[in-house]
Image 1 (cartoon, one colour):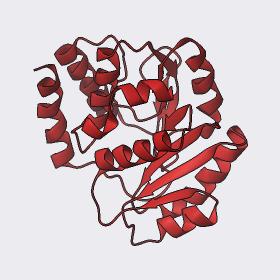
Image 2 (tube, one colour):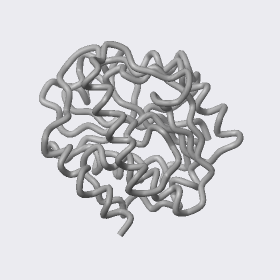
Image 3 (cartoon, one colour):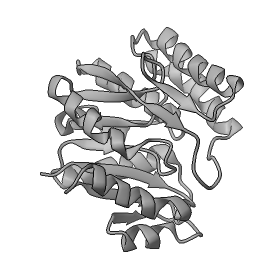
Image 4 (spheres, one colour):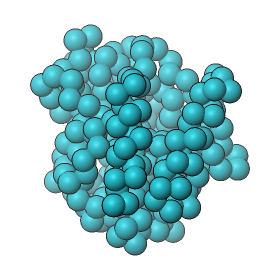
Length: 225
């Protein structure tokens, strides 16, 4: 089966069409699976027009539930490998071949901002410090060795993704990224990090909120318990 790229969306109409095209250039033959939370700006229709498979959900239900639904669809379709990435062009589709190549010696590949060769573009010192703190907090709570635990650019072997039982992941916001990697570690997955450069979103508004940050603060230590 070809690789599939799972992308959750909400109000990403300006970003989604060029992203789908860029993915197809980077990975010819790849399937793009967009999971849209009833975006009022027409994101789902634009994704479909660009040739993506679109899962249309009712209402704004959050990042974690979107990934749970997208992963379930990808696994049921027999796709392997399964990639996840953001819709806002913060993740460069040109990095996709490197992530998939690294799966030759791994079960899960993390696109990492915080290993040698990785970094960010158009972030202030405060934003970088907050992101680094989030990963350091997760490492301290869970005893994981990976440097970037909060990123959403990942490539999975389908067998590994199925083993973590995505339907049972509980986080709704960005803590979902930590929870998924923690589950992979718990089932003995080989996890490697590949350096990427994270670029500030091209258009639209960030979905980060205080509620999402608070969920991460209590959800991460709860995983260890």
